[in-house]
Length: 381
Image (cartoon, rainbow, N blue to C red; front, side, top):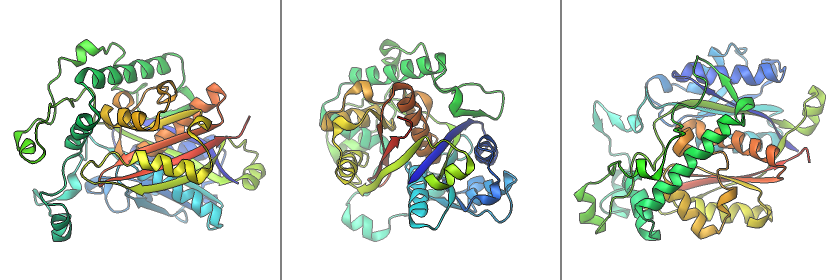
């Protein structure tokens, strides 16, 4: 069986430091000789500057692991480390790995989102003529996609802000009651997620201006009410997270208590203009592949890139909001791009263990109209 032994995430401001720290913490807390690790698969989105040149391999070296431990960096945009977890599990299933680490890191304060698309200060034509011909007018920013989603599903500004306020309240309560204590490995004197605002209210959020309002987009898409703000979107964050993946047999050999298994993983594509709705078909796909129904899932982690995204997913799936992002989501905790997939998995497992749930489902919208969806099964039932 595929096992997830332990998940950790860290709070820091330099990607090499935070990524390496998570890797060391995984090895130290599990009393694992790093020489036994067959591969480290890490997600990083902005692969430029200090996050370039196979950042995961450099994190392995910075962590002090033996030179024999390889590392590879993957980019499925926001789902990069969730994809890393899928790759790690698949490698273990295939017998290519005995022990692997799935991780991710992003320093959005030092490598701004979209940095890798620029050359000499100018944005490159990343899609080329083929994409331009297929999608006249070109692809669009995610914030505009979030606005189009809000319009299609008829979400009011107040509904978006209400969702965001609940995210902050849940995250603040989770910190207050120690739900994250065992999930965190601290690098600096930073003790909690900086972007959680316990006093956030709908009234406070209502005072923020729309973040993406631009009449040029109305020429293409028609009337847009401009409801998406910095308050009902995920903030700019730095962070890293990782999980240790192995087999049941190897876990027993090391004296580890397996916490969960990777039950089912999948990925799908969707309309790259709406872009962020891929989580809807991805959820249906992973449930069908797992042979489970929505009612079998005890907890959901749906990445809160924007409030409208999760609300549209809830509307289409019919999932119980009380089971979704129980400890808050990215609007409060943050969305350090490459790290978010393994962060969500760590949080999801924590919720299952605390509530006694068996199955957890996580899904992640991604630039370009793709989405990952995964189901984990808690084992210590």
